[in-house]
Image (tube, rainbow, N blue to C red; front, side):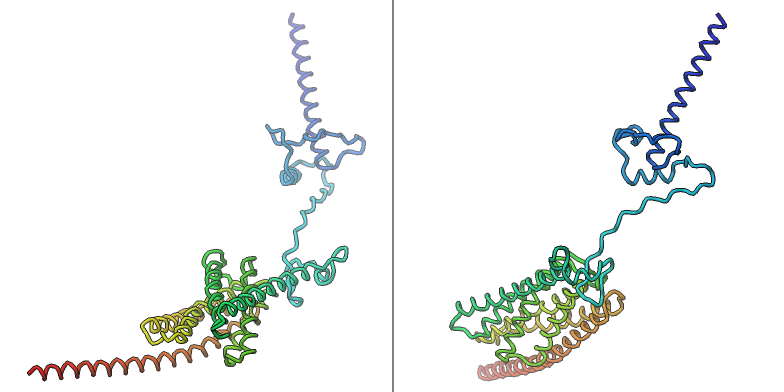
Length: 372
């Protein structure tokens, strides 16, 4: 009886050892098939498709988990043998191409963007340039159509009246869009100058580019503005084109657009009040005061802070900074004219008020003497 129990126990030990050996062989075969190397004398096992799984789960391991398992698994090669190389990293997608040939973007594939791509189709740069040109041309056509519509509706008005209506509409639209981009959509121009353009910024810049081309052509044709306004329009067109070509700095260009256009509706209202004979009234005084206050506070004060952030930041290109300085100089030229106008009007208002006060005082004194 004791011999039987002993034999039965030895048999159970042998069975247990065989099961452990079988389990270790299966685990070794699974790791060998996962790692891609095996002993030459043994055939490569063909494990099922879901053999490599997480513990307690029937789902296959992800690619990242396989790499981690490969790095952490013990090697089945003899000691001193070289470890097989790690699997290559997945290729990264190239960054957005630059439209400026002298300043390629990081990860730009190269010259194939400039010529023709696969199967004779235009390259990516050509397609982007055509898309921007198409948006600017559509904007120009839209503003020109609006001007023609105003001319047909207001036949008794002058051409300048209708052109200023278009300018007023563009001012309201550009203020709303640029304010949304700067204050809501982002990025913030004081902390991220020179950042890549967003799609909304590109659309707004193309819309504004078409308007400035229309207005500059109108001013040159009718000879209604001086050299300072023509220089302002030319710098605005060049700045927008540079931002679109570079694919960056649209943030600060949009901020400059907001500061430039925030006083434009007031300027047009001032002209309309003068044409209708309502300028010399309380409404005209309010419009003039708001125009001078906004121009001084936003275009000169806030513009100085924006220019400082632009100059100290290493991200924007040097010619973008030069353009910002030129626009700020033009703003100061306008500021001198506006302050001179405000000073003259203030002196005139003061003399008018003083003469009127003297007349009223004389009337009160004369009436008081007559009663006695």
